[in-house]
Image (cartoon, rainbow, N blue to C red):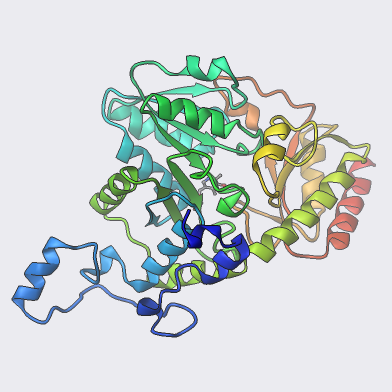
Length: 393
Ligand SMILES: *Cc1c(COP(=O)(O)O)cnc(C)c1O
């Protein structure tokens, strides 16, 4: 490990990506808006063509504003070669998959994956001749080895899973993949590299919807893929081939968000755990799914591998959909909407049983996902309490 890797995570969050040749001594990397980059003469232009990724070349390849963010995200994943930026989290996922798969290959996809990830596998990947086999997120031991067959070229994880929060045995899956020359990828959006540095745990590609905790203020769409040597270059080439670029303004906002992500995640964690434990004691609540709570599938892996929890979890209620709708509609402090990772709390009805194919999801009742924001937890609990009272009547 280099000195850089050994700094504490909070220090890395503050210092990462602020190279002086990019910031010119300004604390934050300035917003460099650019399409055309001017060369001094034709010789300089011809020289630039030989090294398009080594400096200012053309706006689509980025400016120090985007490079500073990519550099910072790489610094959070010890062992990574680099990071590519994409216009959304979904774009990062689809680009990474396209970069490592060829027609005729098979992809192993976790059954708890984010729904648009599945849609891409069942849509475009299928159309170009890549088959997807879904697998149980809780696969362990010998069953992991049994997943792979000779056409398997990549295995995709998401831990904890979208909506259902199972924590996977990521190190074991990554190890089995690497032993076979299969590329392992993870959607690491929930934990971020701060709570789970995926590359250090043996994964080849760590993907983030920076839209969530990195930007952290519900005002940016952005994705990233951080990868080991050899895979990083493939993803960069695919992203450039697809014409992906992100605006300097969005990259700036994400860099700015990153600086406070450590304290934000701690606040999200503390408040969400307090609320999850309070929910467990409510008669109307049938089950709480939070990776840090015993009883959530994969909790032992969470305790072994993660350094903390984020602020997104789910619970099931006793009752029907009408009771669920009444409950959500009567909340005052929780917005109703997609996405998460911002400063504001959100509530969402979720139905994971409709999505699965490799495993059956059985819930004791209708489910609600909560994103716990940075409000006072006491206000959020009081809000939930009044909503439960109204719903129970
Ligand atoms: C939101 C989300 C994404 C997609 O990110 P976008 O920036 O909205 O495209 C991917 N994975 C997970 C787990 C998400 O929650």
